[in-house]
Length: 159
Image (cartoon, rainbow, N blue to C red; front, side, top):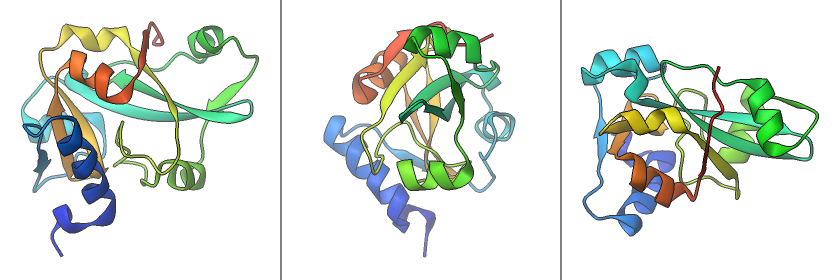
């Protein structure tokens, strides 16, 4: 079975196609599990890789899209959500909430409705690359389309 035939990848592809028929999934021969691996595989800057980080935020989960060369700031996350506590979701929580395994978590096509925040540092790139449901699959998108397809709120959420 090719990577593009896997259920999580097909879910992302369907979401992409419904949004913009020109957006395609790129299947890589090399891993894009980490931002550094993805940047190396795609020959782009690490910051152009969109990390999808799921946080447990009091009674729910929130997805934060962060540039590959940045770290999410817990203090800024708590402040932007006006909450007292937040923590990274466990691997099981990520899988159960998004339908993706860590390393392939896409900003779109989740099993459950998740609020999305996008770090404003991603604006500095013309092209961004985000996971597409598998560690070897990504899609290319610009900042405006990323914001529109995720319905994400743009904020300063990195250190």
